[in-house]
Image (cartoon, rainbow over all chains, first blue to last red; front, side, top):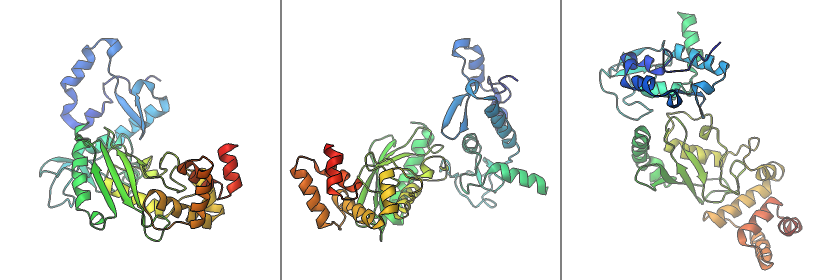
Length: 143
Length: 199
């Protein structure tokens, strides 16, 4: 099995953010000479930062699986009559009404880019520490 | 420094300043540079512990990846505690390593450090010598920690007997820090301390 996370193609995290995936940034990557090719960086553990081509097969599978699970976490427009939290605890900036926020199974909400960056390092809710894996699987079971 | 990191520290800094702990003089933070990457913290030794009455200075370095990674924190004030290195001030605390969460803040870190001072975890030590003393000679541990608090952090309790032993060692050419470390790690056995320094 090859390097399933190599390159910035399908598994890129920016795909999770909807239509941003065809940004200019990607264009740059394709055009730059091979020796300067920018390989996406992942976090197999919270303090372990490595380019995709230096991950073991097991780590790649785990990260790919995590990205897959993240896609199932709903993104909705922020509504201050439903959400108690007034600000995203990651960047500490107040939510604007109608802004896209990602819901975790524990119902904590965050800016999509803030929480995606966090989940790629640690698959837990930063507020209540509930593991997202377990919570996702339970919510599948009950539905 | 990355935008999100400095923006957050800016907000947190205000949060700490307004907090009730600051009003009670229990914690304090001070900015050391304009881009919010280095701060100085201070925590008061918790009541009913050997650290009571002392003020402990902390070095806080905020990484560019904050809040996705924890701040790097160490004690600048020398302290005798199983989970804090008596030599370097390095701290062994899970939330500053793998148990960090992006929702934690400077305020919660400082409060967690106060909690750690009040309840040491000798089975997960940073300083093995201190941890052994904590388990095997709890009374010596308490008076030693008090002596360190009074020597370095302005605490009120000092054992006359310990001060005399330190003076004796200073009389034969040791400096004060060296004498205190040697005596503390030898459970205040003068001969062993001399052997440790000169042996």
